[in-house]
Length: 487
Image (cartoon, rainbow, N blue to C red; front, side, top):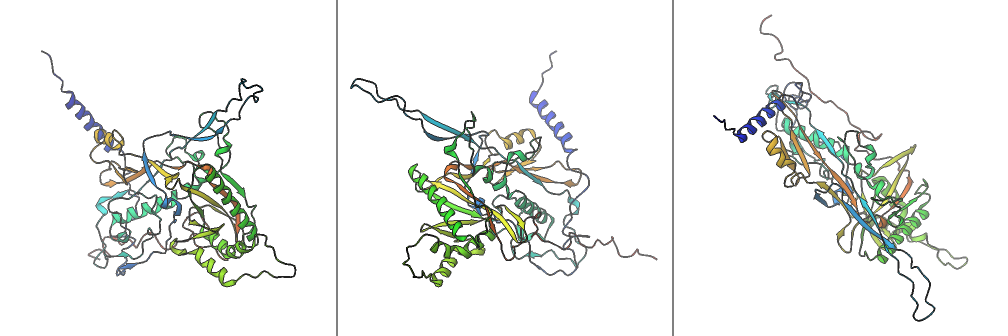
């Protein structure tokens, strides 16, 4: 007698057995979270008033918040830059029937962009702990009045169901997601500038894409042959660590000259109209606008008769300074006047700056082309699309239990609910982004610009001298009762 095997049933049984095995070994059995409510909860102080205010600041990711974001499944894309046509060869004909010189051949420089890989996870939670309060003196209507994420700080932060900063003190889910989002915002903001694959971990669990410090640079080489591609190089110039306050004329001359060269190249290459922005830290822009109006009006050579004096109207200087700063604290309307054009300035907390001594800082000024030809994006973000047909989510549906995996933000972030250990749970997310700069030759960087603010503003980064916090991470942990029932 021949036994008939139901292969579908067998496969389902194997998958079920596998999922049960997987679910027994993931989350630690020791909770690591500090809860918001209940005994020892951060917000469990009896009689704590409803309104909460945050003194925390997060990185204002100015440039990243304005870059388009596109999904892709291409791991190793190649982009081309026509760098020129070689010289004509041969001599001019002598006779009317002689051959003329031969035209040159086109040259192509290819460049590519790599994915980064960023991930973070929540702490381990005991779900049995959620929803508890210490006693009737504890309130669950606490509300965070100001939202630290409403200043362009969430450009690279995954969204998640239940993520509402105003409710972070009301329940354990909101608190956990708030802490997760804060960590993500701070930890990955600087990679837009400093990202470099040399920082990747050995096993590939953490990867960085090429940031602007690498992309806005010289020394471009063909991605396939390694041949030098000087025509693709950005303009990179050092200001020599000169102080903007005492070298304002030199600063105006350098910035104007860089922008003039960029416009010249873009025009001659047929890329007009181009939309550029300048990016720099808050403190540097403020110090530049202190001196730019007067230097802009006076740094050029002016023919003045001998014995005459050139006067500058102070009212005009103040007016230009105020106009260039725009709505400074909401990051709206900032610009530098360069050759009569208002070039937008993006104030970016993620733009690197280095403390060089008492009160002295160094930073770079970036000239970034956002679009060419009247709207064609050339600087933008890409991310691997986890929602692609046949991709991660579709595979998870077949090979992983239940809703262990899901995506957010149009497939930009992949979330994983770790298999629980009894009542202990944890969630993590990852993304694979990259920064694209298709026309590096019309970008530029003025490096090593020094400035001396009267006092540096507070920093959103925990490794910065001007980062501050304080207070406690947990409340008082009362025993199950104050005294036992009998003496």
